[in-house]
Every structure is written in C-alpha cells, then in structure tokens.
Image (tube, rainbow, N blue to C red; front, top):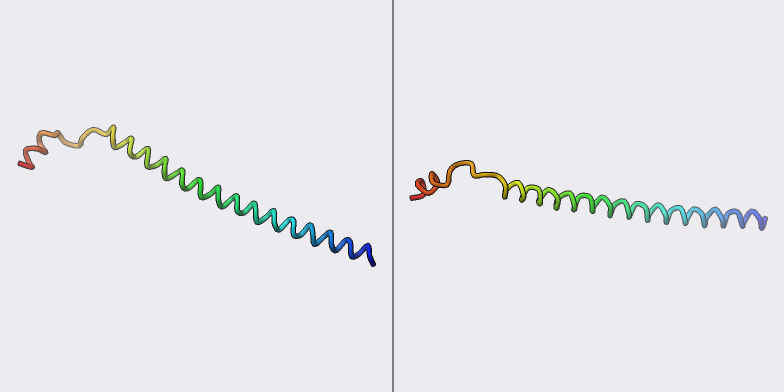
Length: 69
C-alpha cells in the first residue's frame, strides 16, 4: 500500500507540473500573438506614412490655388 500511495503522489505532482507548464505556454503564446498584432500595425502605419510622403499630388498645385481663390 505505501508504494501505491507514492505512485499516486508522483502522478499528482506530474499532473500539477504539466498543468503549470501548459498555462505558462498559453501565456507565452498569448503574449506573442499580441506582439505580432502590435508590430504588424506599427509596420503598416510606417509603410502607409512612407507611401503618403512619396506619392505625387493627384492634380497640379496651381489648379488648387485657382479654385481656392
């Protein structure tokens, strides 16, 4: 009987360890996914900003000034 009790304790210990490791892995995954979303947005913003800075005007500036007057 004492040996059976030791096996049960070892199994419970392994079960708690596995559950803890699973929680930690899920937490790391969640953080990594959040990081991917965050940096994807930053990159998209920077690319959009660069595109806006490079894009030539859609119509000549003179036409715009004439219409505003």
